[in-house]
Length: 556
Image (spheres, rainbow, N blue to C red):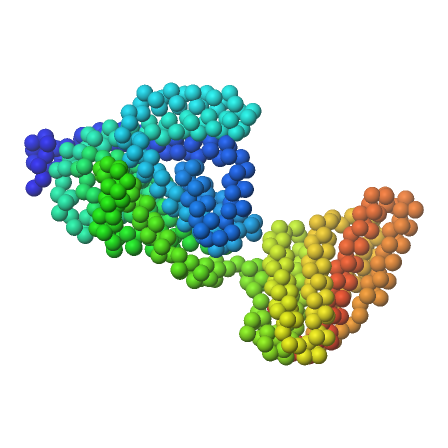
């Protein structure tokens, strides 16, 4: 039976004392988290556009991405801020998934700097006398320098730094009161069950606070008195490292596919790291102690845990390094959106480039797919109400066009049959017309239909029908009808009617000018559809396209 410092031999004897310490524990944790938030926000203001510049310029190789993520997170003390920035870059197309992965892995390593700050500075110095003036002066200077964001941000960061260490001081004092109670528990004999329990405790702490740094501070301050066995504290550190993935998992709810993949890379890395650290727990603790002895750092509990946190994240990087290409390929298959599926070629395969006849057939099929998808996008834009989601479809089709062009370039470097040599220019032009069709329909999508009175409605309807017929004819694989003459006639009649309405005072200059601009855009859409179909016409039989199944329309 456990002995109670109060002498009654039951746990309940010191339960009121533990409840009394709950206030200081929560208060210290709150001060620490508030300090972290102010410190991070202040540093982001002080940095200005530096974060963007560094991420865009220093992530081209895996090593540079790793070092960049480590450096930025070490300075900003927030892996979440770095991860959010990385996700934004991936969504904007400025970073690939592979580049983003290594920045995130580096952020995991950089966040271990918190443990070193706490163990080497926060727990060794009496910060109370310095922290309070730092908080006051930093926040006052931040308010006074509102008009100068960088200097004001630096001042706020100084205030946050003071709160950071003030919170550590409060936590340390609170946990020092718990040392006798912790020492009275049979933790040393807990074995594997105790390791599992403390691992879970670390996960729960990080999940509840949504901050691995906050969980680390609790663990380090709890271990400072030596009452908590190192193996159990180390298990809690692993749990805190694993628990930080809860933030990433929450971020995948309603997130873009790119954001979800970056978050899943974070989860995978932390899971691999946690598994490696658990399997090698005694060896990693021994190595941590050896490293501290080697560099002359006092190997007390908090310092040993800080070294352990850093070393097992390094272990995770060593494990994931050879697996990264496979991981990136696997992640790219997850969370695929409907629009991203459109960007993937359905018929092109690099193995076909050595067989000209098969390569030509695949190219014709893919060019026809791009053509019909572009037609469907144009129809949606001409008939549907304003819908911002269609811009994502246009981006997907632009990506598909790039893939087709790259395949065309590879085919052109191989030995070609005369037939393939004749087809390539037409296929290149067909891809170009599909791009024009997407762009021009996007311009129409942004224009409002001007009102020119009831007398103009029949003329507009006739022109709209001519455009719709041109799109339908351009999507027919069985036969081709040149619709340019009918489009030209409808356009000329509409133009004449608009100018007549202007001369008779039935429409104003702005109204007629806007109508002509819209009509011209619609004419370009119809002609781009016709021109793309014309370029593909000689080669449709080569692609086996004389049947509807070859089409892959956009959903409405």
